[in-house]
Amino acid sequence: MSNDIYERLREFLDTLPTGFPVTPTGVEIRILKKLFTPEEAELTMKLKNEPEEVSLIAARIGMEKSELTAKLEEMVMKGLIFRVRDAGRTFYQSYQFMVGIYEFQLKNLDKEFCKLFEEYLPYLGISLASLKTKQLRVIPVESAVNTLNSVAPYNQIKELVRQQELISVAECICRKEQKLLGNECDRPKETCLAFGDFARFYIDNQWARQINVEETMNILDLAEESGLVLSPTNTQKLEAICCCCPCCWPILKTVKLVNKSKYVTVSYYHAKIDSDLCLSCGLCVDRCQVDAIKDQDGCFEVLNEKCIGCGLCVSTCPEQAISLTEKPQMEPPPKDFRATLRKIETERLAIQHKS
Image (cartoon, rainbow, N blue to C red; front, side):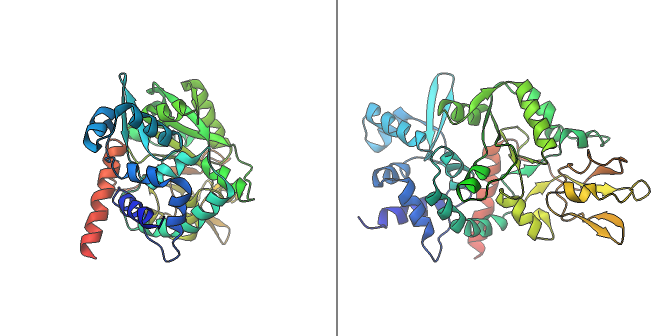
């Protein structure tokens, strides 16, 4: 069979919020051929980009309900589509490649797929960098939040966690991928947190285990101790938190290379150093995950436009010379992840119309 069905699938995935750009090497087609059978590709293109019950899908595409349910469940378990369960009802939808299908490959990763993804990543990165709205943002660790006079509710990480009814934890896919590529990281592995619908999806698929609030707090404390940056969904509603390191997470790798972090991620704060209290011990330089603190002739200085406001440098300063400062004129994040994706989709369409 020719590549035509995979080219059509590529075009379909490119209509979803974060896109699936074409490349000169054709690596995107190789990824799709590895993940999807031709039958799965066809069925994916018949789904909507919103949750829909099987009975409605079956009537729309002319397939028997039980047969369709079996096929959709098989595709869910392969991480090709998304499933939502709510009040005894089950819904299915197509889903974007990243954040989405790639992350859903947690239990299916092999070295071949990792190499394909690394080859494709620069093209995805260029596409997403042009968008003002990001899928993830940076939220300060709890100890750094305590240095602020007032904190918006969506930036109070532990308070947000206390409000959650369903929580899961899974292995970090970024660190798993790098291990398969021979670049194993020594940071904690089981640190990816999900809440609500995402938690249910991962738990039901046996990709993650359910945990309570207390264990979640322990994981957040371990993340801070290990120098991991907290990166939740760019939403007011807490839906997922990645605990990230710069050796494995592509976004932090990129921030280290650029002068202005706002082109790569969203943060609401930057650190500041009180020169009168600073002893120039240099601990903050080692603690910073994005090289945003520089030694200027024995005086340590934060590069504001590079700093991501993670707060990891705050808790390790022996003289409490570092605190966080709120960035001016920052808009609140969208209400939930669907709203975030709608904003991204609108921005992509506007860029396409200009070109």
